[in-house]
Length: 107
Image (cartoon, rainbow, N blue to C red; front, side, top):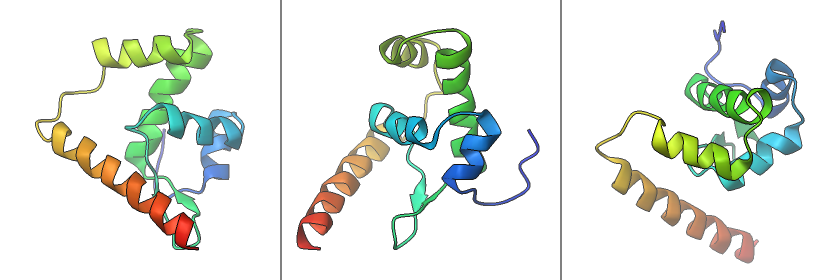
């Protein structure tokens, strides 16, 4: 893949993998490691790293025919390289989600 831009819109990523944007949004809810950046208006901005993660999911789910749970297990088993900071990252992701819920409630 030739990824020459810093950020990609969800429609561009969907076109790249020939999937629906709704599938990408759903995968965000199922795979916590897939969290694209968002603008102030909530527009998703995918980085080349995010796109690599999606490529793995497309391969596991669409090409190999795994279920969501099967893909989760495959990622956990073979998965992505272990990051020594993963515990902190997971905590920050949880905090971010909590703050987003609070922000949505205040809006």
